[in-house]
Structure formats: C-alpha cells, structure tokens
Length: 390
Ligand code: KIV
Ligand code: ZN
Image (cartoon, rainbow, N blue to C red; front, side):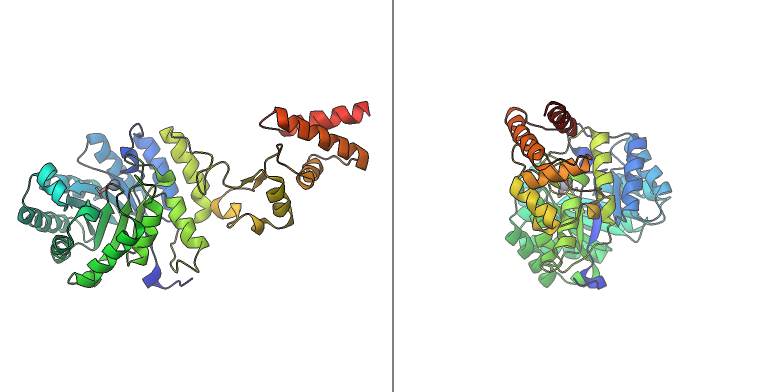
C-alpha cells in the first residue's frame, strides 16, 4: 500500500445530510452533534452537516457542528442559488475549516424537465454560484448532479467553469445509482484527461445504491482518479442509500494490494459509529451487512468453526478489533462440530470425561435440530443435567 499524499483518499461523510434524506431518518440537533463527534474521532476529512437553507433547524445544526468540530472540515450543501449560498456561508462561519458544497444538475433530463433551464443558463449558474460561494470560503465543492447521465462534452464545460470560478473539489455523483463500475471509472478518466486545469481540483465520487453498486462504483471512481469518496455510515441515504463508509474504508484498508490507496480513518471507531447511527435513526442494520452486521464476524458451520479455532485467517479477512469489535463469535447450533463444542465447554468452565463429552455432544446436536439459537444457558442446562443423571 502506498502512503503518499497522491494516493490518499479523503472521506467526505454525508450521513447528516444525504443520510438524513432517507425517509424516516431525521435527527435532532443533539443526535447530530453526537454523530458529528464520533465522525471527528474517526478522522473523517469532511462532515456534511446539513443543508442550511432547508429549515431553521438544519441551519442551526450546521452552525452548532461548525462551532464544535475542530478536526474535520464542516460543510453545508447549497443549490446554485445566491440565497442558498448565503445561508450556507452564514452557517459554516464558526468553523475552523468550513466548506460550501454547491450543485446543479447537468444531465439533459434534469436540465429540461426538472430545472427547465437551457444548458447555457446552467453554465452561467455554475459560474455565479461558485464565485459567490468563494466570497465565504476558499473551500468550495461543486457537484454535477446526475453526472453519470450527462453528456461528456457538456460535463467538461461545466467542470471547467466551476474550476475557473474557484471550485477546489469537483464531485461527479451517480445520483440515481445507474452507472456500472467500468463506466464510472471511465468517466473520471475522461474528465481528468480532457478538462482544462483538472489538476487544480480534487475529484470526488458520490454513489447511490439503486443497483447495489455504490461501493464498487466508489472504488472504481478512485481507480479512475478520484481522491474523495462521499459516503454514509451504514450506507443510509436517499432510496437504496449511499455508498457505506465502513465498506469503502475497509476495502481500501484490507485490499491495499489491489487498491493502492489509503484513508486516514480510525477504523476501530467504525462499530461505535454504526451502532450510534442505527440507534438514532431507528434503522436496524441487517445481520449479513458487510463489516458491521451482527453476522459479519460470526461463524456457524462446523468446518468454519474448526478452521477459526486453528487460525482465524482461514475464514476472516480482517480482524474484529480493526473495526472495534471485541471478538468474533462461534455461533452454537446444529452446524457446530466437536471442536467448537469442546471449546465452548472449556469457556464455560467444564472439564468432561470422554463418555460424558460424547453424550453431551449428542444431546447438543439433537437440541440443535429442535432449536434455532442455542445459548450458553442451554448448554449449561444440558451439561448439568447430564452430569447429575449419569
Ligand atoms: O446524489 C446527489 O447527486 C447528491 C448531490 C446533491 C451531491 O446528493
Ligand atoms: Zn446523493
């Protein structure tokens, strides 16, 4: 893995903005502050704290987070409208490091139907919005909403306009989760090769998960030259969600051989962040969710449990500690083998003779056929009964 600055991928967390746009996920000021503190402890580069113009509550959240967070850049979203930008500029004023993130759609569909604007008017709006944002901060990000359904020549012009007006980060969102990894990588390569002064900006991915490709697309964007990934904790966000931060970060950390990049995320904070976001939003994390799901470090089959007891690398590609989990678990059930059962008995403080062990194991397997989850209490009851009656 190369640790040069050129290969550093910035993590832009939008849990508090795009994540909050998940239906039913709205958060109070106090909850947002708690999440922002965990994101700061994780060393997230940029925290998108909200959309200041959206409501007085959102404005207050961005402002309070800007006041309290010192080690991450605090960002507010703004449409390409002067009023939005002024509100965003006002909200990030207390920040030690503040960013305005302004956006406008560049795809024919969005320009014609949603914005009802001519492409030339969109170019003018980009120039005006980015220049205006630069009056509040040197750190301006511009996004081409629906970039992946935009025409490349127009996208080049739009990006050139944003860079010329002073944008230092250019984000190319896959707003509707439509791109495939190859297409998304190719888009970054073409843009970086064809846009004048592309080297003056950091390019950024922002992927939605409508086809379940958000993480793969984000990593493909980085392979194509992007050096910022926009993502959310647990992948929450509009519709099917955004790229999950824990997945992109652990993919980069675990597969440095195939993905020669690095982030500065303190990965042992991942589990704490996941649990907090899940508790605050009420969105349960599915058991088989990569990295943070309840089963991500749990092993049920006898063959896997035997392998794990010999060497955890047989069935785990990262350590539980690396994401802030105390330890892996060997789930006891009908698939468990003798090795795992013996290990469990040792854990519970039992030392059984050979015959007693064989009988307990037989009874344990029979129980497994009747009962989905076998808890320690079930095993204790079973062994105590066997010892008392034999
Ligand atoms: O998905 C998207 O295009 C967005 C932009 C506002 C960046 O969230
Ligand atoms: Zn989005």
